[in-house]
Length: 238
Image 1 (spheres, rainbow, N blue to C red):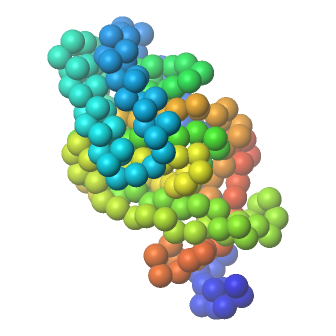
Image 2 (cartoon, helix red, strand yellow; image 1 turned 30 degrees about the vertical axis):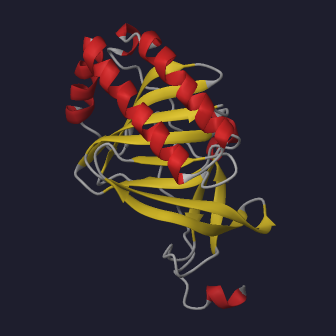
């Protein structure tokens, strides 16, 4: 393991200002009624959770998630208006990522997430949760990792590379509680908008950010990362 440290990137002494993706007060959020479309989509989500991982299962669920999006476009005018806001609203260091909730509950959280090229979403986790991301516009890079089983202390862990993929419009990324749960999102276009679905969402205080001390290329695995609980980093709501 020590050989990985030779020639490593210098230890990061400070981290970017980040915070959990808490819902913003979107002007149209209270006007969007997703109940009908969600009722059609929910059985597919339950099936995806129960059947476990697999390319075929993920493809079926991706198709269902695209249908969910199109049903909202056809039946909920405010949803289209919200997409326009996500496409034009300015982002800044104080508000690096925009999050608008569509569905909030103990079992599922659905919303629109905006990521820009200047503000990638660092590696983070959702303990005990599973999730789906559908790209609605732009292009993103999603990198996924698992805990490598090497934990020096609570604040430093080993990360095993799982996947690194570029996604275009209507392509999907999936993670589960037991694989790929640690992930980061980088916009490859100027701006990307994603439909973000989180199942069995955990409390923000349970989550962590991960800051690798080595280059995250797939040829280097596991990598060493500093783990910082979300509650220890203060930043704007996203």
